[in-house]
Length: 572
Image 1 (tube, rainbow, N blue to C red):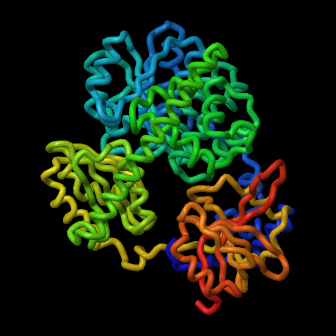
Image 2: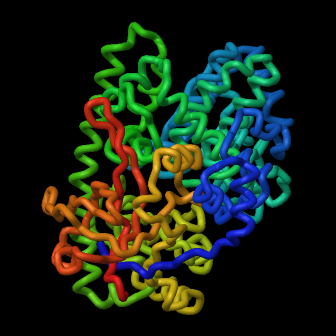
Image 3: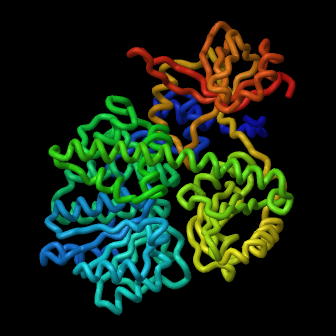
């Protein structure tokens, strides 16, 4: 754990106090709402109380009016429909909900999920040809396709209708498909631009259910959509918040189909209140592991399993996901160690604002996670390349201040293909051009990144003494969640805090202790902070503490615990 630059966020106390009165909420909750841009009581109330009624009319999406009648005609005529997805959680859950909805409406549906090593990324002409050979006359892409001009042309040549649904950034010219549904289309006036891929797929499902008079089906689809939405790290406001909040509630309460039940059981989450942490760190890694290490179809088959007679098969598939995840963790740890060594020992790699690091045969299934780990460690945009002969496959992750996709577009002539978002992207290029790429992207970064933007920051939402922590406050924080992008987990600040027990080292990496202030005591965990144990010992009689609040359950009892974000001396 590094000491961070603390950024105490300002707040208009008069306005937040008025908001607390208007909503009858804890003053700290009102402050947090105001700081997240919900200054008016009506908007804040909607944020605290999301409902399916808050979902927009799906036909406000451009081309939805073309896609739905074509899907309805295919269902009525028993034409074979194929869902073409992607191999991550977002793409898998998108495939699952759209296939399931079409089948429930009577459609003849198959799905295709590309395998990372065999098929590469995205919608490819070869996949169009394969599906056409299987008698498919209508293909719907989910979570991919917005830059698949060649595949769209191949579909047109073969007489296959193609509906593209995606949420990635489009190029200047849209693919020549029957319909292109993407809220990021420049000509699309849809009010919510930040849906995950599964969110866009859910809008198609919503439109189908609405037209068929089957709106009662929607909550079950929202539950699966929540997994992809939370895993894809999209802003948790607007429709994403509705999907995540209501989906988590359904995941916690059940009942579930046999496949999802087996997955939750394999994660040790049966009967527990499931939150965004459980999805991000327990469920999503297992689902992702299928696409990273073998075939994403393992996860799709599991989530599509609804027949109770498939119980044994579902449990076997869930166990397979756990096994693949363990393999992924081993591969990831080895790769990150090698990447860090290269960054720390080779100035040609490490002495830049954008880290571009690669290795022969690095597992392509984990380079994206490795890039995220490098961003966490060095607080620099990071690009990890797996070099296979003459080709380099890359995964890119960024810091908030750096638009990664714009940087890649600045070097676009170097790539065979690339695409993604401002914060995460992928690329393929000739291996021999990696040094030129490193030089050019850093020349661009040197122009747009200020040195201060490379300093890791910790946003502090509010001062909070330990004696002010109550279950009433915690209930308000529960209502404010789930937390993620655009609605970060609140971090509080307390000064003059003492350590009265510990710190004790846990698993050689973490620290456990008990803090006290003005007679109130709380147990606390400081993750990956073992190297700062000496500082805590030296300042145990008084320090400044930055922390979040968490609930823990033990033997049926619920208690509050602090998660340490950072700490420093009283005069720092």
